Length: 504
Image (tube, rainbow, N blue to C red; front, side, top):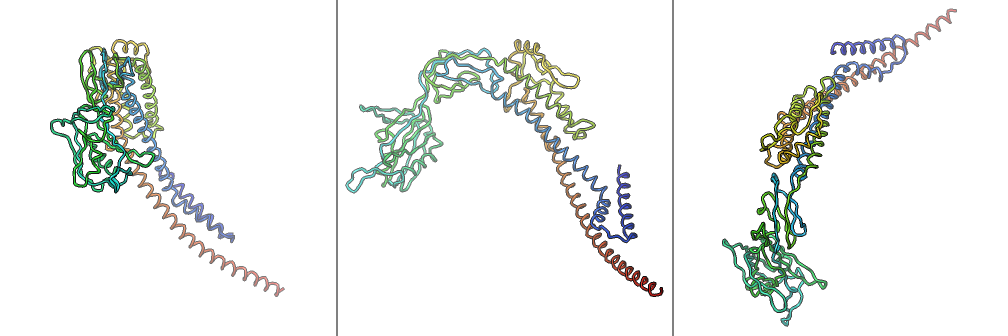
């Protein structure tokens, strides 16, 4: 191929030179621009054609790597998302969603789930609200203060514990006592020239670790109110105290026995009964009572928990996996085709193709019972001569009816899973993306080669420009000399003609 191309380039040079001689012999003007262009193109035709072919090949290879990586990664991600979404696993079902709802924990096996649950009380957080924030005027009478008004300085102490409450005749509730738990949980902070805003900001910063937050509410007249909220649970009640010689005006924000801030909601545990056993929990999200299930308590009442099989979803998932597999297979076969494939010589692409084909016969089930399916083939997935897959619906239906847990296990997904189809596909996708041996390495190699090629093309361009300038200069000088010769020739011709006329 190289020899043929070189001969062609030489012919072009000869043709251009012959054209130059013809122009000179005929005495006609020379088209220097087109002549120089032809000579330069002929000089670098072989190298330019070779670099162009290499550039086209590298572009196709980089595009092919991107297409294959996108296909296999999309396949793995879509299946993993579907599996983690819970639609391919047995799900708990509540008979009364107004009382509680339930979701399965990752990897949970819920076959045979049956529980009776009664919610007697929901968990609640303590909340407290101040009266309108005030400052004494010159006469000692209280005047409304804005949210940014400086009220005084002092050291605040926020404590967490179990509280008892007292309700006054007017219905207002205050804290009667706070009993800190062992290893008392508290935080202290100092404020100077504190306002309602700076106090709220300090509580949000310092009290976050204790589950206490603050908010400032502004009245229609611009007056300020402080609102506090703790975490849910009977042991998460809170008190707030302040001390210091300049803290008198800050006392209105204290929460505790005899303190002015009223309690608008009491801290309490959730009370519920699970299959006849009474229990308490600090929150309304409970994940440690029914194995494999997280309960979200919503109201007082009774509910029965049962399980629903995702038979239709699993059947659909098998069909979707087969369809997507065939699409990815077609992409890989096209890219690695021995005649037309851009990645026909790429070892990573070929390894990915082998891994994809082997997946149908690999054991992907977990701890399945004897006789239960462990491979896609045992699910009823058939492989044709061309490598494409199809689903034997009758066989799949029979396996789902006989071994539902095993089929679920094949589609299970979790961050630590090493078995299951999502994990197998993720491993295949990760291997393909590897920057050491996978398509990631191929992409790096092709990109580097493309960069080197661009430098070579830039060098040819520089050499072409230099040759163009040199030839243009040379031909310009030659044209000047030819023009001078023509001028002398014209003078001599005219002179001879005059002599001949004179002799006649």
